[in-house]
Length: 187
Picture 1 (cartoon, rainbow, N blue to C red):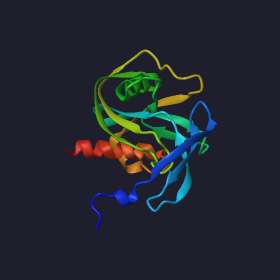
Picture 2: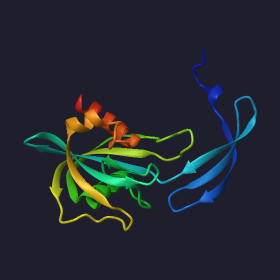
Picture 3: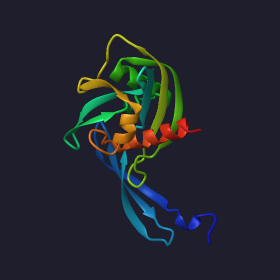
Picture 4: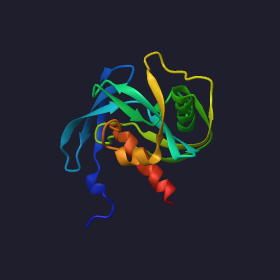
């Protein structure tokens, strides 16, 4: 049995951009396999994302502040934690706080980083950073992007836990965020 995993590592020889859009770019990467075979792989490059899980204690128990929005890829509505891509030069924490304020009109007194994932490391180069938000305070209004249409909803924690993976909880990254939230809660 191998312990150093050297037999698994590919060596990148060159890369070339084949497509560029405001949301992502696509590269072809020429790589040499561990047994010296050259192969081209396609990689999608996008900015890192932040997801923030806003939690409020109410007389009904813990509730999440969530956003319902249209998702063009699946042509359906999705109920999600607030989040989005980093602005240029922005830290993960700043991106999470900004997205919370823009999408929900709440600000957080305290946030905790729960972790980070590579959404699909086989073909994507970016990360999603996941935060938990407490001590929420209501702001005057949302500050949505010009192409964002978002309804803010208070959803009981138990409903989200029970519903994840079924409509309207269809966004896989929200399931990943919820897993980190549950792990944090149980420690």
